[in-house]
Length: 264
Image (tube, rainbow, N blue to C red; front, side, top):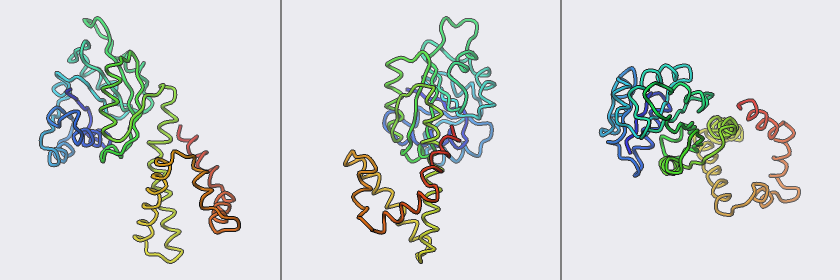
């Protein structure tokens, strides 16, 4: 499979890095385009086999999958620029632009001389795709089993991936894309709390990060609900239940839920 990525910003570059580290698509089959050379040169310094160009039309030529990783307000201009270069009989188009539906993209792909429109997907990873730890969501219009499986295989190599209904993309983004920032904010807050308790900041952060890894590991290994694991460490009259109750008194759970709702 040959992949063209339009846009070498944070998400485009991270996606190229993540895919290039996998086994499904070799780095030599990835082409990425960007208006300026700086970010392209940075990518080439890490992955010399990735092809780079400042010409979007050149990038998508002969691509099996075109990934649009540009800002939402630029995506329609990019589509109009490249669509007459695409072969709709063999190429799928995927967008990473938040808030732009597959239907909207499909309508802008319409042009004379093409008998049928291609499969169109919306793909939402998070920035951890660069280190192959993303949670990526895939929805689409005119999906095929073949493309569904190709995309799942491709993005499972960059962490995990799941097919969802497009109407759920907002909720998925709040949990996983915005969720990266929320997890970082918890780490920061817990680290600051550790400093107040007398630890050096670097030691507190290390402890918090390892503790979160352990929490995730327990849930994965035991396939349990979080409350089941919480019950194991909350003895009657103990310090853990006092801490949890103090957090709830200050709005912990409600703050998380309201933040997620605001992100949708």
